[in-house]
Length: 184
Length: 107
Image 1 (cartoon, chains in turn yellow, orange):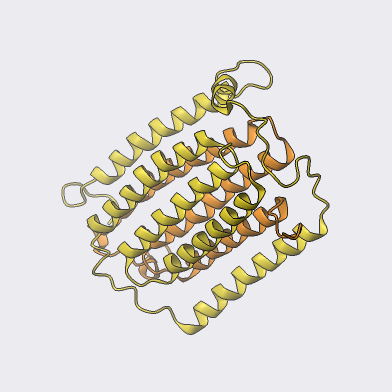
Image 2 (cartoon, chains in turn red, blue):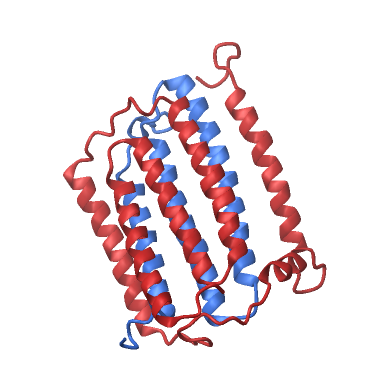
């Protein structure tokens, strides 16, 4: 854990939260889709900072590698391949925006009320402990553990899922409507 | 510093659900399908954050929450890849990824 100081931890938490919420709001409100992708990248990087603050350095690395380095680049490719830049995101109608605002605010209020009502069995209040030591070694051991608490089967299933997604996306994107018949 | 200000599990959960709600807002207002998928990614990201913070506050010293978050990240990557392939194929056929005009299966 790189932060041992409570004041520093608090300040970092609020600064990161401000940045995350600000970038997320900008992401859903901006009209230009490429800017939206850039703001999404910012939010995901801030989340990596959150993981560092929570003491999960490995998750922070995975977040940067997979999300910021992979998925956001994929989104930018998708934007360019579908010429979404030209599809000007015309303002959503007022009714739709109000409805979406109502739904999301209700969702947020409901979850906050539930959090404040439930008695969270906090084992480790306040400061993140320096208890973890090396979480990376433990994660690796658990992922390949064949025992009752191991995750070797989900691990293999997820690797199959990735292979299926790879082949399936190539098959879907390669389909040429001009040469074959079928679906219009 | 007041003790209420020090971020505990409640503060983290509130931030995470706020990010999720913003993702839902984007999901409901976007017209571009790629924008919709980006909002879904934001929501998935806050779900993974939830797993990690609950691991940290309720089961310190264990790594199960982090492993779940790892799986969420993997599934999100697969979802983004397949979604992008579908959008590219759709654009080739219909010259648009406007979700308001995706009505070929209705009626």
